[in-house]
Image (tube, rainbow, N blue to C red; front, side):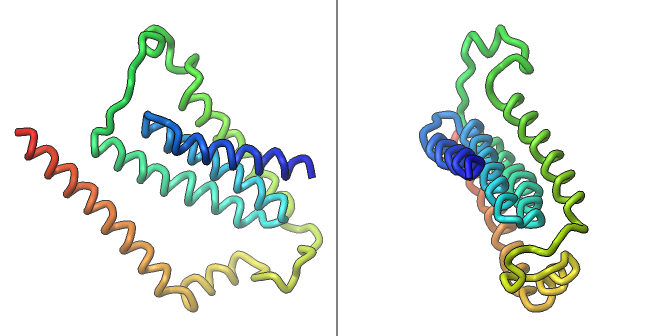
Length: 172
């Protein structure tokens, strides 16, 4: 029960800090930390596959896309004298958070892979039992929502590029 409160607290605090940050890069990285805490909650719910997907898809792919969009739009960032004097690995920001999240991903994947042969879930009627069944359902029963989501992400990327180009032309 203690881990639940730790993960829930981290998720709430990092989610609040996402909207309180002035630097959009820090906001994206805090959102990754929030996704990591949610992944920990999924592990506590005995859903290691969902936890791993949370990290790999959301914290990995989607947040990289967000970072590219933020950088493409040339969002301003603040460089302080402390940032210029300090080695990047000694800074308290993104590098340490990224390292911590990488270690959490490895620990979570090892835990999920070692639990593959253990007793079934206490909630057998709650969902699909194997990854193969999940994949089959995703690409048959839920193929349309899956493809709509990919098109939505593509349209968002194209829209970000169009907005960035329009801003670039306005400056010239």
